[in-house]
Length: 361
Image (cartoon, rainbow, N blue to C red):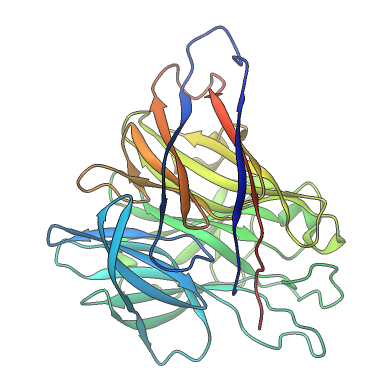
């Protein structure tokens, strides 16, 4: 998952109003540039403990930095995973009241297709007492279908990965929004699973995927019904799909908000744009609104980082930094309006060009 990237140009494109009613809105405002301290090739999760904020960045292996503000990161150090025998990218994290840090990773097994440089990602769980040394609790989300070693995709022969995790407001479940790259075309796209809060220490066999209206399929091997289905198969050489969801609870909108990449017709994953959708009830996968384009261009891994004390990549107020591949030139400003049955309004959008190289094994 090694990459090289560079921002080449940014332009602002004004959009017309979507409708006459006052809807939930997101405005994009230029700000001074900022960068995470580590290289980025996945979602970069954040958590608070002991009055300090921490952030994980991952390229093959994760590092943890202290966050002085959403534009200042320091004291980076490598993260150690006990017994690790493959690359892991930490894409989600959450700290308990006793300081225990729970994290979830994207893993890429090697040599899944003899003679081809392909992998099939899986999602696993970690637990740590200090946020630096983690015990691996194993794989909790895995595609159960056969791999497609004849795929035209340059990276994946199937699998589950590129995800984020958020607890619900009642503290009953952790919800996983992840990308399904394998199986029948109708099962590909952004899917969802959940795990009871009490299962966080020992999660094996306790994660359930959403399928045909219920949380009925096992996290390992079970089927999925995507909440944002792919329009064209990832293996076709001309995929059309959302991927890489980064979800947060927004206290200004009182909605869950997800940012996603969108690839359209390119086996190298060049991006058509970044999209946003909202949902007031994360337990209802059908309640996500139709995604609206937030940004033109092909930068990967869009996410937010909140400004206020206690705010992270999964808890954000009225203003947050928008990061794309660890770089930020914009704030997002969230304004409440009509509920989610009204169209989401985007007041401006940037266009970005990013050069990068994804998974290399």
